[in-house]
Amino acid sequence: MAESLQNINLVADVGGTNIRLALIYDHKASHKKTEHVECFKCADFTSLQSVVKHYLSDKKLTINAACFAIAGPVVGETLTMTNLGWSFSVASLKQALDIDTVHFINDYTAIAMSLPQLSGAQLIEIHAGEVDEKAPRIICGPGTGLGLAQLINVNGRFECISGEGGHVEFSPVNARQCQLLENLMAKFEHVSVERLLSGQGIVNIYQSLAFIDGLDAQSYDASQISQGFINRSDPLCIETIELFYQILANFLGNMVLFSGAFGGVYIGGGIMPRLIEYIDKELFIKAYSHKGRFSDYVLKAPIYLITESQPGLIGAAVYLQQILVQSSEKETIDE
Image (cartoon, rainbow, N blue to C red):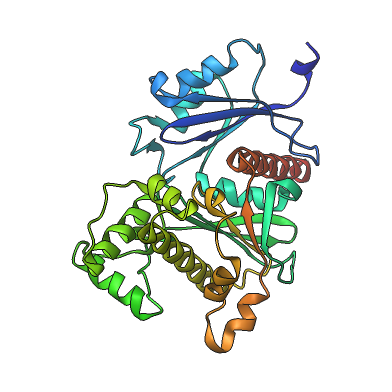
């Protein structure tokens, strides 16, 4: 009964396979702790509202506001998840769930918003750098695709700048990578960096190297190729993953040149956490800082790997809290 007197808000991280939901209490609190975290298979439900209703069914709470981070573009009133088939709008969801305030954000907007909250066991430091808390931060996540977003500090309030940076052209930096690009250009009209920095990208690199060297490629998926690298059991798998993380490092260095992200460079996604113990970090930093006269410039930016399992929920909570606090402050000024 006591809980019903508090400000109780809902946050969700909606992917193509899983949906994670949590509650946050009192949007004015300085600590944005998510509670009652639960994960469900999207395939077990027919719609977003049905899984949310199921999650709330045994809690008997009144939800004041909600924020849904979704894996897809957030444009217009009606949103459709490409890899799931769910279609929903702000108006229909508010009505179905009886929640007055509902916000949708992109999943990498949510992860970007989580960055100032992450520390300690939630991160692995790859390169120390010189942290500037007021400078921009970037998040890059190789996974199913390549997510990318930038976070900026505007007078103590955080704003996310997101786009489709994973679809910029792949830029090779040595002869081997030029061979790789040439092979991929024969397969794809546009060779984006996502064609290499993703799960399918690992497969693309592996198959291209096999073709270039006249080797018989196995029908490996990204996980099997990664395992061949980790076990040091397959030279082609080893070179594939070494190229993968060097291309990633080089791309991150380019992002620092674009953004001046001295607040931190963060790596998310599901691939690098499995590889981090086995990569040559000196080789990674060498590729990252391969910027000629501006090598020292990019080395000022610290690099972290995100190990927190729920950055999307944390970021959705931060985003929602910030919106609600701003709304409350505006109401106070208007009065």
